[in-house]
Length: 73
Image (cartoon, rainbow, N blue to C red; front, side, top):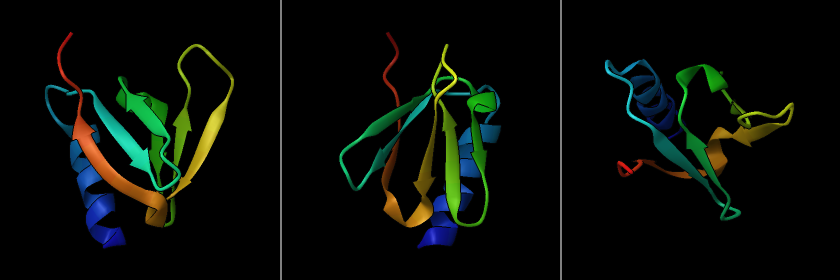
């Protein structure tokens, strides 16, 4: 399961053109990814940089429950 989430994340981040998406974690938090450069993925976690901030969230891969594209405004 973790490998499929990693692969899906990579597909979303490398899509041409990029389509904004949302990461939902088991704790109910949502992370809107509107810039592919604001996210880094490794084998066990995702590093999410909050826009216009110095804050970073560390999301463990096994805590990700869904990845969904965001609706156009």
